[in-house]
Amino acid sequence: MELFYTPRHARVGDVIPFFDNGEFKPFYLKNWNPYWGEDRTDGWHMLTTTDHLHYTEHSTGIHGGTGSVIKVDGLYHMFYCKFTHNPERQYVWHATSTDLITWTELPEETFGPDPEIYMVTDWRDPFVFYNEEEQCWWMLLCTQTVGKTARRGCVGLCKSDDLHHWTCCPPLYAPDACMSGYECPDLFYMNGWYYLVFSQFTDRFQTIYRMSRSLNGPWIRPHVDSFDARPFYAAKTGSDGEHRYIYGWNPTRTQNTWKYDPDHYDGYDYNTWDWGGSLVVHELVQHEDGTLGVKPVPAVLNAVKTENYLKWRPLNGAWLEENKTLRVDNPGAYACTISANEVPQVCRFETEFTYEEGTERIGVALQVDDEFARGYYFYFEPKRQRVEWKGPLRMHEQGGWTFPHAVELERPLKLTAGETYKIRIIVDDTVVILYVNDDVALSTRAYDLRARKFGLIVSDGSAAFSNTALYTR
Image (cartoon, rainbow, N blue to C red; front, side, top):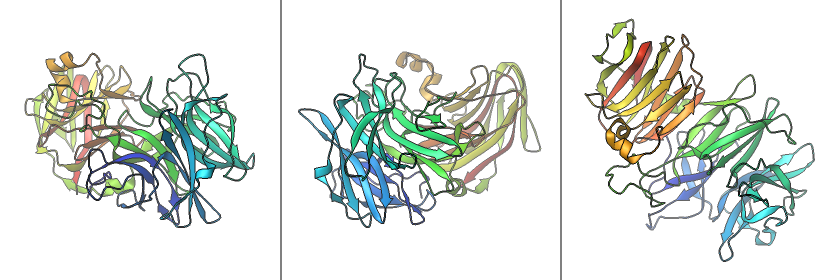
């Protein structure tokens, strides 16, 4: 059993969350490339789950891009997009169903953008909801305004009284900042706040959000406006009325879809990210100030709950172990200890750390070798207020030859000396997800190194690790 759903012979693309009759029924775009077997069925597929761990799947027969599904008076409505070439255009389509299995398309209702407001080349990812204040339906879209610069990305808006006839309106959100349409827009209300979620792939490649007290704005950009790192994209949210979850895809790195893979690299860790991969679901956390965080889905944690005995072997630094706490005081040097345990293919590694003022780095390593050289590293850096991910190539000179940048992946993280930070690292084959304090996530992939060890690190300072545990299935 996998922890993060990946379809056989294919990958999970954009997810369209939906909840109905006590079950989560997220739809998704299925990326089969390069598989052409007899069981290939393109288009939208629907998953059914009650716990975001166990899924069943069937095809809908709908061929199109991302959209949304709603239920009105027992009838299901699906809105999605289709593309044309020569000229390049995008259009919104509408289909209905009585059972979520068989869908009837309504091609006569197809419509494109008002060219006086929006670029005709971007008109996709419709998200439909009912605006109680205006007593009509709103549709949000990924599009671009007609503007003077290339920074035209926006969340477009259409309105309807009956779900069948739509009027184009000025955009809901248009900050003139991004050189791409804001993909997969999503909107929800929670405890006094409206949240606008979307993804962008220029300037940044990430799913982000804005917040407002009103649908009319202003839309506030929070200090940390993301949910995860680059390997969690096109994310949208869904709720059962009590909990709200955000669904995104953790991309694979095996297809060289964009023809940018390094020519002389034999592994996968430094290939380009593909479109689609494994389904990753976080549960949303709302803070007192209205900002959002994420935490693991309970069923995923409970799937790996058999505790394994952990034994450590110090390499550098004077590590002291007492009452399941490892401490090291090592100013001016790099202290590390390595486990006797190998990293299982599916597991959950947990620890809590505290550090003293002036400490440069605190780290957890995965798949590290006995020389503590090649491995995967999560580094917590108080001076930079972030957690960083580094792969094995970055530990050697070859990494400097290959990459003009210093950071692979990072997430902002408030770090304070004396505070306790709870770390969960979930490994499902090549998918690796870090959670900090059940609030901050960093997802990634780890392909090339297997059957190696865990490590703990303290660089230029003092820190302690407690309640360290390894869980398997």
